[in-house]
Length: 236
Image 1 (tube, rainbow, N blue to C red):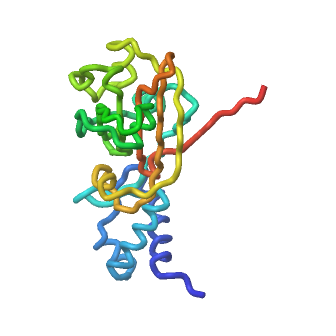
Image 2 (spheres, rainbow, N blue to C red; image 1 turned 30 degrees about the vertical axis):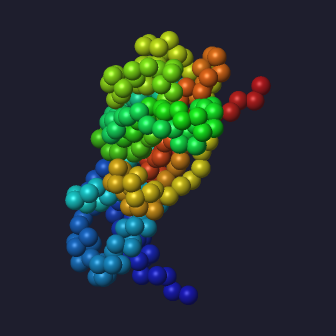
């Protein structure tokens, strides 16, 4: 059985990546087509394959680039995004895309411990987070307004954990984390400049304070090529 042509082109492009270096821009699709002698559609299939493998990524209206190393994330550690990214010698940033008070969906209401059909509202925040200027995740955060009144008056590009602690005296002492593979929706893909349906990693956190109250429900979707999970387990 012969190898599909796009995989041969994929292998040819992959061999060039080491010479280009991390973050370097690939030749244009037209140039790759000329070098490989393949049809434009075949070249694109090869590029999409490399993107799926986490070796390259695309910037809107700019072209294809070699992926930087992924961020290492340890869900057992307490450090927030800004801290653990900076600790790895990278530059983190946060952009608040929307912030409003809205009715709690059934999923959010259950996570925050609201009564069913209680008509409660929550603070709903959507933020895009970047590493070295590249968008890597989009998160939807929901906070109980009774625990953090007037939360929307703060700069939400800052650490939410720090705002809760310093402004409201609320400290997170326990977090439940669920993780699973996912495919980027069209909305998530647009925020992350990715292709709809591209693989991603879904991380859902519910955070509790010392009184056992569910303070925050966070749904976080990463680009699959931007994060690597690492857990250090010690056996005493």
